[in-house]
Length: 139
Length: 143
Image 1 (cartoon, each protein chain N blue to C red):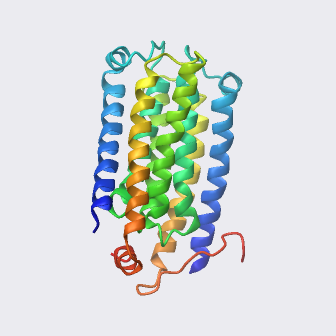
Image 2 (cartoon, helix red, strand yellow):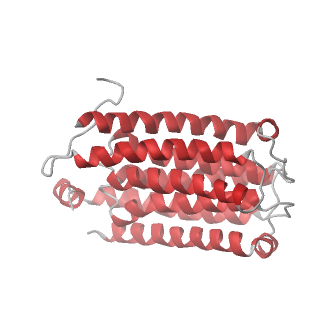
């Protein structure tokens, strides 16, 4: 297995753990999380909880790609998109003044992870030969 | 039988389409949707909109399982058990245990409906997969 693939898997797992951590704090310490990250205040936490559940669920979809990126190549590319789409949304939201500035932190995190994953995945696919891909897909 | 896998794919695609209705409503018309469901409009409404964004991503990540549940077995099971299951469980608990608005039950029932049907179809489809040559679902909409 080439080094780019190994690092891609590590970065995906790092992203999964980061998502789980955010969801954990959002559910069990929502006010502290919102304050610490400067995400504004909320009257009711139900939608923050819903966001956290969806984030956890999204992270579970990343796991097959983290385990075997070649077999789940579609998931691998989709998880890159799933990092860059919200990053873009957060950047635009803060830029137009619709979101509190704390969302910039989330955007930078998602953008960084997404870019690193995209680069590593492209390099991994470029450096692997067809035989190795078939061997890994059936494993 | 391949027919189970085809019907599973069809129901996942229908579920994705229903999700997209909620995505558009949550992202662009959250006040209208929440009023229609008799759910209090939160202040700020930003978390409703970005929940819609995450629902879009979950729907996109369900697509591989809809295209070929044999090839993307893990994704197919995650989309049924975790996606639909957790959605139904979360909103059912919110209403029944934490006194949230009854309007959330509509969302729970949609997830429950699709989760049960997709779960049965996926279970049946996995039971008919041949050990050496997994069947593929070329086109879910052709018989």
